Image (cartoon, rainbow, N blue to C red; front, side, top):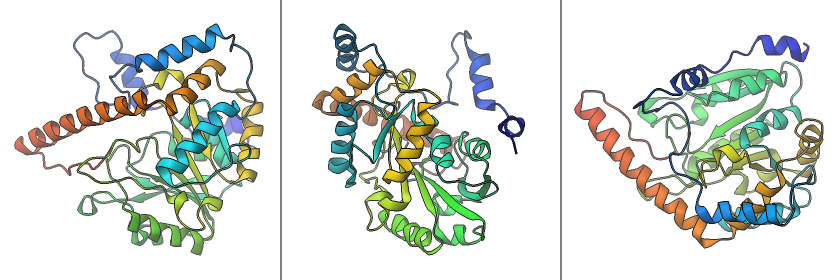
Length: 318
């Protein structure tokens, strides 16, 4: 099927339609889009200005500047327990969202299936379709706090299944997979020879003392995992459009080729700012301040919903 035909199968996001309609409406509070209402920390803005003053207004390498790839490698090792070579196993993207279609394009063949936990982020199924695959929804349930389980997956896997998306902390449910959950999912992926796309953009926003874990850190999983992350949620940089990917070298090479003929490269001066931000303690203090405020709001909304007779699972993250 031609790409132009696949586009006919993909509808515009209803959330984005509502978002556009709401622009300019005074006093409206939007609960429908993953947009931090915090501004980018001032020191990160200053880093961007510094980059501009240094003349960083030219093309960067297609996979991103080495300074940022090395900073991402450091972050992944220190925070996630993932060892990735910045030269061949990490790339910088124009937001984490772009990385999905590039990731699928690196390995997915026409008609192959991708298991996606549902409820799901709005972009997952369309990117599978645009890459030529078939999205297969795997329902998750309130009684399990919407956490994905192998029992759920076993009902939907087939000979055509090629990949699995996991999103923890989850958008929109707020579910956070435990290390045991991830170990069981990893065994399932190995058993069925699946590639796992792990969306970890909300990794720092977890509550009640729990910790988020990365499936690529488990034994034998890096070679079959595409870890997607970015700066939009972590540092409130949604408009900067900057993400990163860690994956086996053969996947990164193909994704870089896709980016080469698509966006060419992410914006250079924003990459510099992100690289500096990752190694600046002020950035992580800002993240913790945001996390505490999100936690306060989570507790308030959950309490009020239940008081109004709308029983709601208390989200563990996102």
